Image 1 (cartoon, helix red, strand yellow):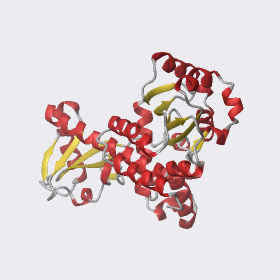
Image 2 (tube, one colour; image 1 turned 90 degrees about the horizontal axis):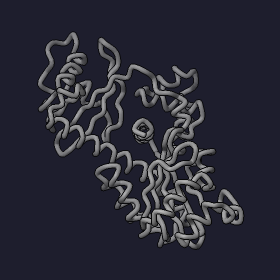
Image 3 (cartoon, rainbow, N blue to C red; image 1 turned 180 degrees about the vertical axis):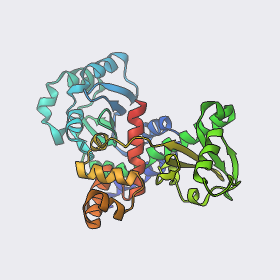
Length: 348
């Protein structure tokens, strides 16, 4: 853990043990608010989703302040040095206010007088999660005293795990939504869903799901009672998009979600390409966004190199850089984090 002091190391381990159990995005948020004060000094812990102009879209605070303070936060949140820093730089690292602005200048703001003083805090530290340009997702802690370098490092080390935990929570939420929709009669919704058991036998398929299976097996006889071989290896765990599967009518993207011994395949048509501008909004350079776009399309390193006119070694270098910016360690996690971020932007 890079020489992290024992107290912070134990706090990091406790944090990681808690956040990976979230069953949906809401419980992920509330779980963070519950565990963070146990591992970091915090008189006030908050989960925020912020618009590009600095105005709050989602505000969850523990303990809950009175209505006047919340109203002042809505009015003056744009004055936050941390919000301004992250909106401008999309810097994934944990930051303290004193890392990006002078404390004297911050004390002169309406935000400090109307929010921080009533809360009895003077310092704040924040870390962000990947999000498109239309959204800033941040976790903040506030305290009368400034945070140490070790406490900031704890948040930096926790960030990749928070990203993965949020992605997993979103996937679990999707599984429940899918199964609930199945119970209501998913055929009416028109979603392409196939459910298979642990032996790859198809237990359930919506009408659109059967059509998707027919497209995948075109020219090879009737649709079988088992998951086609080409589909078994598609769709990473946790809802990560698979390599696009080519059919007679175009490309299908597949998400593979699991619950118990069941595998749920969710088919989506990918008629348009992912906007590189949105990928750049995750803090990536134009070339890194191009590489991530290829990865999200399921392209291999060699295919990506050929498509972009660069060497496989250069692809690896860009991939390593974008992994670092997204707080992940491999291509599967990068694709998962990117889809989760873009899905967050679409839902917003």
